[in-house]
Length: 162
View 1: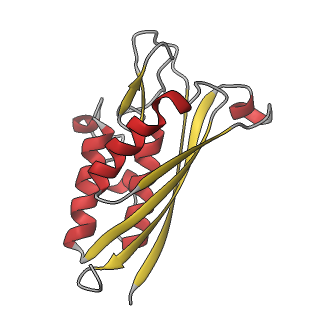
View 2: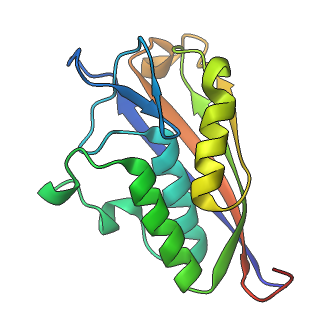
């Protein structure tokens, strides 16, 4: 059986643009400031995508969708994640699961966690779990300057029990 593990990380600071929506796990979070970024700055989708790319040995998100390329300005990160999943699949791998730890003082994730997990699971084609964590006042994340996400994924060579 050929299994591979990948880890991904993403972090964005909150934007000063009051019209910018906060997108987490493909879900717009109401009444919360958005994150700065070239795309929609969805830290959860970005971390999962990078974990998948790493596990499959396909590079990283910045190489595929560079922030120097205007075609990705304002991109929907769920669409970017779907493209990553397609590439992982084309490389001969199946996603078994993804697990995410979101580090944020605000907003609370619990009210939208199930919706985020469903959206991500549907896009990835495997279970995705999300856990919320606080930075307990330590550093920029503890001062609620932004949001970070750590993601781990497990992939399996297609054709092996899949």
